[in-house]
Image (tube, each protein chain N blue to C red):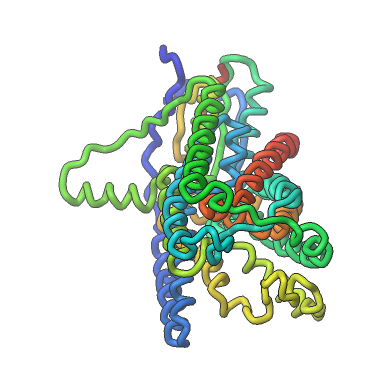
Length: 415
Length: 80
């Protein structure tokens, strides 16, 4: 072989076997439809809508392997920016859509008000700290908040442990919210770019920084040396049936490019804002944490986080199976499960190394604490915050970059 | 394709997921001599694509990626 760079050979054809994955997809589809029908019949069609949003998010996340932890981690570990470029594209798409929605909600900047539901949060040192904790936690735990949910759908047992860790971290933060909120968070300003720079200025600056971010990723990738392109061998297409089968393979089996994932997730996020509010994941999960602790007998309503008005979380009005957020989060898991079954990727996967569970638990705790300290995770504080033209989104992103860098240092030792 | 190629070391990474599939393969290659051949067994589909690409980017020569049974894949790589 006298090639300059080693090319990756084509994969050999999958072996024929009993296709239990595809059969298992059938009851999952029936369950998905049943849930939608039940909520509609119960007079809560909006919950069925959130369920559909969640399914769509979960399906796209799994198909494009769109994980924010991998995005940052692979940048450091492999000089590979494919997923982070997908994220930037998703942010750009959502910035256009969010700007239109926010302009419709709050065209008059002189009023000094924020558009409803935009993810503009108090900006302070806690925002950066939360980003660092979350970034470290997501790399240690093997997935961001959404990454953990879609990997549960793929059958990762370690991700389920990370999920439990997140609930613990969220409850720890809730215990300390009575200090954080009055002493640190509530006294800090909510910095919304259109208030500082006007509509066009705020949107333009967001796009310029996204472009610079993209160029920085390209430069960073170039440091890694020449890249090997994966040349997959495609069988020749003859009949119409061949072509239909190839289409099915592209959609349901082959991994989607991260750029397509970003484009679709950004678009779905705009639709969700049009329907009700930007995509968020962990506010709901923190309610589950409180709800579980309450079942164990601890009166969580005495905590400011759960009982107090200022935080506005109003836990106890939203039990886990009767809120939009819950249907959205369960939908992500169900959508990912369906996608993984159709792609024959589902597998109950237990790590060979027991220490991986401890790592997932610690990572989850850090993520849970960080997510609620920033009042949002990789989605609420980042993927929905930057398009909200909120400065807190950018500060959280810097924290993610710092935290995940330390996460990569840690996992190199733990491998 | 790998018939006749001597496998110097085999690494069973079943159960491991990304990025550990790559990190462990890389660590194993670091212990080996140039020209020696490593065979890695994985059962994580994303790793079937990511590990050969990442090791290729590190300059190693990927000789073969093949499915060996229902769930497992073997990746054969020659150290640069």
